[in-house]
Length: 88
Image 1 (cartoon, helix red, strand yellow):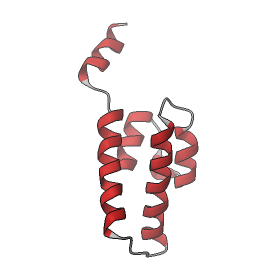
Image 2: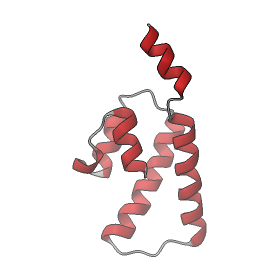
Image 3: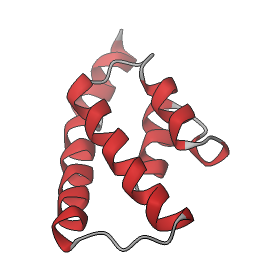
Image 4: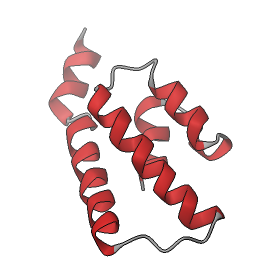
C-alpha cells in the first residue's frame, strides 16, 4: 500500500528501488521530516519481515498500519488541490 501510494503521489519508482533509495528520493520532495522518520521505521520493519523472516510484535504491526493510514490521509492530494493546480 505505501509503495504504491509513494509511487503514484511522488512519481518515485518504488518497486525498482530499495527502501533506502526510496527514503533518499523522498528527502527531495515536500514531505514532513516526521513522516520520513516514521517511513524509515516502517521500511525497516517490513524489510525485516520480508528478508529476515522476523515476527514483529502485534503493537509494532498496529503502529505500522496506523502510521500508513495517517501518512496517506495527510499526504494525498484532494480534489480541490488538484483543481487549483490545474487552473493555474
